[in-house]
Each structure stands twice: as C-alpha cells, then as structure tokens.
Amino acid sequence: MNSADVIIIGGGIVGSSIAYHLTEAGCRDILVLERETHQGKGSTGKSMGGVRAQFATDINIRMSLYSIPFFGAFDEVMGHPSGYRPQGYLFVANTPAHMDYLRENYRHQVAAGVKAVRLLDARDVSHIAPELRHDDILGGSFCATDGFVDPYSVMTGFMPKAIERGVRLMRDTDVTGIAVDARGVAGVQTSRGFISGRTVVNAAGAWAGNVARLAGVDLPVEPLRRMLVPTEPFDKVSHQSPMVVDMNTGFHYRPEGRGLLLAWNDPDETPGFKLNFDRGFIEKVLTRGADRLPCLEEAEVNPKRAWAGLYEMTPDHHPVMGEVKQLPGFFLANGFSGHGVMHSPATGRIMADLILRGRSGLVDTDLLGLDRFASGRLLHETAVL
Ligand SMILES: Cc1cc2nc3c(=O)[nH]c(=O)nc-3n(C[C@H](O)[C@H](O)[C@H](O)COP(=O)(O)OP(=O)(O)OC[C@H]3O[C@@H](n4cnc5c(N)ncnc54)[C@H](O)[C@@H]3O)c2cc1C
Image (tube, rainbow, N blue to C red; front, side, top):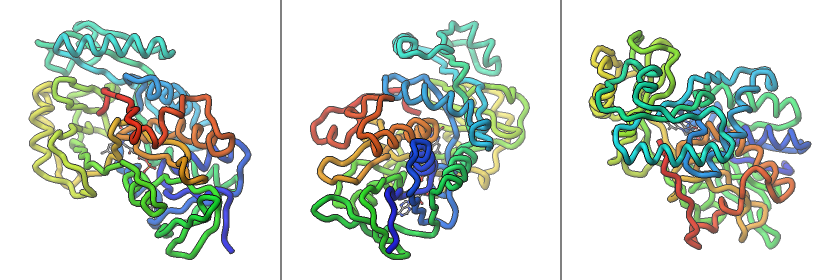
C-alpha cells in the first residue's frame, strides 16, 4: 500500500517550502500531492512577488526577518535563482494620520530587529521616487532590504532540492477525501488511490477551506480575487525603482521586465473563486495610478497581458499554522492573506518545527492556531496590501 510519513496537500510555494524544510531537519519520507499537471497554477504563479519587513505585527515582522535573508542566500544554497531584488518598498503618506501610522510601525519594526528601515520626509521621498506627484506628500517609510522575488522560481528551487533528498512529488493527483480513525488522521483518498499516513499537511492555498472540510474541519479561509496589470515597455520610471505604495488610495507598482506592474486592491471585491480578469479594472487602477504617478498617462496597457489570481484570506489577515487540536496529525499552513510568497521560507521552517518537534522558536505559534477564531483571540494586521 502507498504510504508516507508526511503527506503534503498542495505543491505551491508553501507546500514546496515545507517539504524542503522537513528534509533540512532530516525527515525524508514525504509525499507532495498536487492536483494540477504542473506546479504554480494556483496563487504562486499569479503573485506580484513583493517581499517586505514593513509590517505592523510582531509575527509578520519576524516571519520576514527569517525569510528575507533566506531569499538573499537562496541562489547559493539551492543552486537556483530566487530572483530576489532588494530594491525596497516605499510607503508614501499624504496625511498626518498615515505618517503617525508609519511612525508607530517603524518603532515596532526597529524594536523587532529590522535594520534597514527608515522614516522619510517629503524631500527623501522625492529623491527615491522623483516620478511621483509630490505637492501633497508629507513623507514616508522605506526599507532597503524589502523588494521582490520571482515566486515561480522560488517554488521550483525548493522542490528539486527536496526531491534530491527523497521527497516524492505526485502531480495530477487530486485529494478527494481525508481518512480519520480513533488515533487521528489515517491517510488521504486521491484520484490515484488511497495513501496512508499519520501526518497530513493542508497547503492548498485558496482551496484550503475545501480541503479542511474533507477532514470535517471548519477553516475560515476565503478566496478573494486580486488583479494585476503590466504595462508595455515604459522607461519613464527607473527599473531600479522600489515597490511604491500610495497609502492614500492603496495603488502600488513596481518595475517588471521593461515596464511596470500595477496593482490596487478593489475594496468592492467579494469573496469567491473568481479567476477571470475584469477589463473594467484597468480604468480603475490607471485612474488611481495616474493621480500619484502622472507619467502613467503615457503608458500603454494590453488587457490580454493582465491577470487575476486569488488571495487566501483569514478574518484577521494572519496565517493559520499548526496542528488541529481535535484531529491529531492534521496540520494547517493556510490563510496567508496576500503574504504567502514572502513568508514561504519562514512557513516551511515553522511547519517543519511543529511537525517534527511540536514547537517552533521562530514565532509564538500559539497565536496562530485555528482555535483563535472560536475563542475570539484574533490578531490584527493593518499593513495589508
Ligand atoms: C495577484 C496576486 C498578487 C500577490 N502578491 C503577493 C506579493 O506581492 N507577495 C506575497 O508574499 N504574496 C502575494 N500574493 C499571495 C501569494 O501568491 C500566496 O499567498 C501564495 O502563493 C500561497 O501559496 P500556496 O502554496 O499556499 O498556494 P498555491 O500557490 O495556490 O498552491 C496551492 C496548491 O494546492 C493545490 N490544491 C488545491 N486543492 C488540492 C487538492 N484537493 N488536491 C491536490 N492539490 C490541491 C492547487 O492546485 C495549488 O497548486 C499574491 C497573490 C495574488 C493572487
């Protein structure tokens, strides 16, 4: 009979990182199940690839403090490029309330150990991003080690290293059931037959709620559509530009290829498995964008190159990590709420610690358990993009 010590459901960046980190800790009998014929067809292949330590909560900052140096060393350790470009994240404020917010986050980040973050006045902002409309800018914050990675390349870097050490990856294998007995999880039913195992990890991204339901677990992770619009080649903004976030509207952009990648999170978007790109979004993002980045009026956009993907949202915008108390052996690594790429290294490490040792020193994992939703002990992250 087919079996594995650890069965991971989902071969995206999170499942791949968990597999890799388990092998780092000496675990070898690991099976990753991916229903698609190729990895990356979930959210990982749709991501903007942003990486930052500029968060409001300790947990998110700590996860970034592990992950960012990991991306920095990735090429050497994995023999595969992560595409990490430390071009920074620039938050731009034009209200005193936003400046206060950045100041408070800055204090928090420095206290947690972020070294490269600094608060900016209006002149500093204009040096870093001269292309912006500056008349109402009060200041901002910038962290030089923030930047971007290539999510697909990170995912496909984790996996061969894990496979080299014995991990098996089964593609085209849909998990359709989770078997439970008196001891806890007993295995998974798949489109290719039953696989027995006492440790099963849900790494199914935006589909995690469906996978949890197979085990009778109620997991509050909702899919939420996000859309990205690349411009055609455009040289009015430096290709060395950071990710720039206009806090006034939430519009943000970064260099991508020979152009820019434009984003804005539409507050009217509603949860659901919507993967179609809505052409009406182009007008919305360009209107917000040109208000802060006037040269965008001259940029060309081809709607056929734009795309949509899914965030996997939890009610408090923090991931759910750890073993489900009522179901021994069933582990969750879900609900990254837009940060699953940048936090994939820390997630892999934390999950390997929890699976193999029952605890992790990286963050206070008690705060990330599923039971926080029932008990109302929610975390609160306001720096969500
Ligand atoms: C437009 C957009 C922009 C984003 N920008 C950023 C960003 O700048 N920075 C950042 O950090 N994050 C960003 N994210 C979020 C990030 O992409 C996700 O958090 C991350 O990719 C989640 O990885 P994952 O491996 O959990 O999920 P996925 O990549 O979705 O992988 C889950 C896998 O599980 C498989 N699966 C599901 N159900 C089953 C089943 N029953 N059986 C077998 N396999 C199954 C799926 O096929 C899929 O391959 C963005 C997301 C989007 C959509």
